[in-house]
Length: 385
Ligand code: NAD
Ligand code: USQ
Image (cartoon, rainbow, N blue to C red; front, side, top):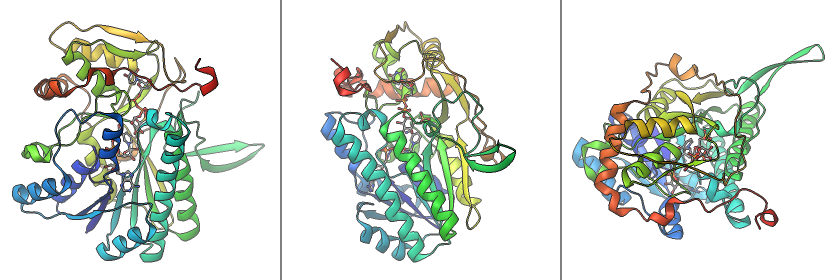
């Protein structure tokens, strides 16, 4: 089967493309290289050096004998999207191609508008391209656990059975996201559910938790196949940042008391979840949702686990939280759907942390230390003083 990976030059899209190619799928990657542009805008770079897309694709062919088709272009260009879907004729499309940093979306009006326009309109163009070309294509869309926020009830996999005034219905689970970025994913979910219901498209929305790690069996085969690793306060995610801070001998930046709890997942499980979703497609007309996380931890617990695993002194700092989020809350998430399809989770352990410490140590001179401190605040501009 042919699989088109949108956002195939990114942190997760690139290793997913390799994982699917290695599993025997005929894979194409599409990307507009926007992520490399955000690095230039922010004056940072991936901690692990990454090859350009052409070099990566050539390296994979040399290492594996398998060819990846490559489409460089923008999901905002509806004609390009339609032409690509028509030409490649995929059986499944995996969609990673969005602006994915919550802090980036909170910089100012322009970045909030860019994020929602890029993400929501890009996905809408894709839905039209699928509907106009072949409604049988299975869309596997990356959503986020942050769509739900932190409600005071159990979080189900996308849908909730509700009884109200003596009547029952199955509704989309209510959403209370925490940034303009996370909101863009909610808007996408609604548009996708609508097209499943009205056009009988088939889609799997993967509400993924915070990803950690950097290597997969395929990216480790050649240094030109490495995927990016972000450390800055805009794109770096919490566990990866804490590992990097520990290696640099910098304090771990826990925002507030660290009582906020998040779902986590190892990058090796991310790529496998995508393979499982592709291999077991949603039915025509079905909007299927999986919570793609393997364990939940508070930010304070993540800091403690990293500090205990690191072979040296680690200082944990509690900064004033630059975000507006519940400092302590209930968090109980159902995440059995992917396990039922066969996922065998890699839970966070010393082996992964030790290998990440080594990867970071090799490249630690590439860090711009100023980029480690959070500068972007969630509070309304007039309240920031
Ligand atoms: P990333 O920024 O590294 O990759 C996204 C890729 O999409 C980039 O290469 C970028 O250039 C491309 N892109 C963005 N807009 C595009 C457009 N309009 N047209 C074509 N290409 C475009 O992000 P990532 O960390 O790999 O995340 C991938 C997806 O997974 C995102 O949708 C994100 O929301 C989701 N996700 C990520 C995490 C995480 O911890 N990294 C967790 C949960 C969900
Ligand atoms: N945090 C700290 N210190 C840090 C960085 C983060 O305490 O140095 C805290 C944040 O306040 C937050 C939590 O850690 O409570 C997670 O922050 P994050 O930056 O690791 O993750 P987030 O902003 O939620 O976004 C990331 C990805 C995004 C994805 C999301 C999954 O960038 O693409 O959608 O994780 S989830 O969190 O489940 O919504």
